Amino acid sequence: MDFEYEVVEPKISEKEYVLLEETCEELRNVLIYTSSLHKENVRFDESQVKSIIRNFDPEITDDRLDILIYFLRCNFAGFGKLDPLMHDPNIEDITCNGRDMPVFVYHRKYSNLVTNILFENEELNKYVLKIAQKADKQMSLTSPLVDAALPGGSRAQITYSDIISSKGSSFTIRKFKAEPMTPVDLISLSTYNSELMAVIWLCVENNKSMIVVGGTASGKTSTMNAISFFIPSISKIVSIEDTREIQLPHKNWLPLKTREGGKNFDSADVDMFTLLKTSLRQRPEFIIVGEVRGVEAQTLFQAMNTGHTTFSTLHAGGVKEAINRLTHDPINVPTVMFGALDLMIIQGLQYKNGLGFRRCLSINEMDIEGGDVRWNPLYEWNLKTDTFDRVYSQSTILESIAYTNGWTGEELESQIDSRKCLLDRMVEKKIFDIDEISHFINELRKMTYNAD
Image 1 (tube, one colour):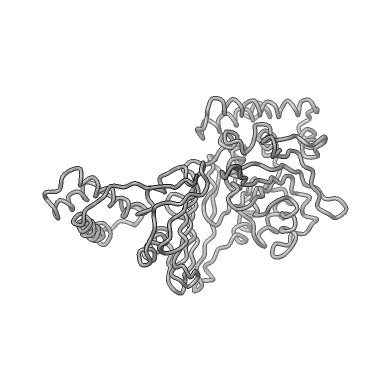
Image 2 (cartoon, helix red, strand yellow):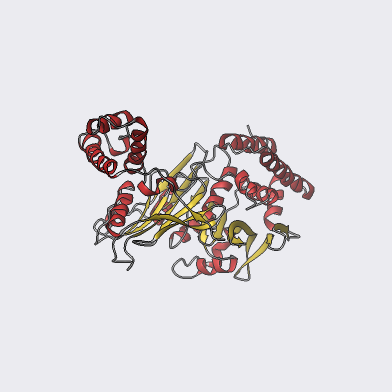
């Protein structure tokens, strides 16, 4: 049985529709054109809106007034037809492929679902322009492609008119949780287990650099955000992204974002390569790069080789594919630089009975041998049992951590086990609060390293 996602909203009469149109026009005059406030400070004032509606229709009942207020709030302050979808925390992606076609969503539980929402041609053109405006982007027939961050942190990819697609305007909105993904979330979702996360925790604390690798919608950024919780609370962090997705509880954190000036303002562009070079002058202890796609990866590896701990993501299917991408055009990272990369985490979007779920497929430590990049799997996901198998007998990374801290092999295992137990307790007690999780992580770190 194929499930469908149906949005049910109150019905309005033709008279009420005209009333909505008149109120919208008045709102534009009152709240925008006559406002001295900046756009981000303009708010939907319900009492003022009710007064405007009653001026047009003094006899309207309170229950119908509330219905009109709902639609006006969606259209003026929200996302119109898509507003119910934007408020559903279980929806990850919203896609419209063209005019007179149903909108599709990706649901956390049911995967891809068709909805009962569709846009006619002119309606769709106006809607994509509205989305672009919400992101402070300009669209036109000469600039029909926009990739932008929406208010609230969602990311939109928009095309305008039929210049790019014969089906007309289109858009895809990738939604992100209001609260950042934490290690407890990933364990609760079975994307990782507590032992894998404990090993990653120990590696982050001991300044090991890593890259999270995976395909589209595999949860790479969410994982990188979660493992960043293990960074000591007062460490200096710089993050670099195309659109803001990383959310950290750390106070000594500088988030940087690239800027596209447009074809007429090339000199105003600030790309990831420029931001990465700039960040190195700020003496960060940790550098987090949203995703490497080009020459910025060379600078990222240079940062690793000069002692900076770096985290990043890469679009690839596995370790071998990731190495091929990194060592060939357009990235071209010299093989010799891979000696500074400690871990490569592979994550994938899997399907069972038509439903999608995310899993860490493997955790691998990296090395160079005879001029070639080698990797040693530490943990691998078992497809048949849906469990994580410990596959290593010896780990260079973990042995170096033990040596640096003066631990024996037994003490190293004890450190991993103490982190595993704490993570298990937080999952068991359903501790999802960001501040509380950060507190427990920092307390264990202090106990381990006798920090003040």
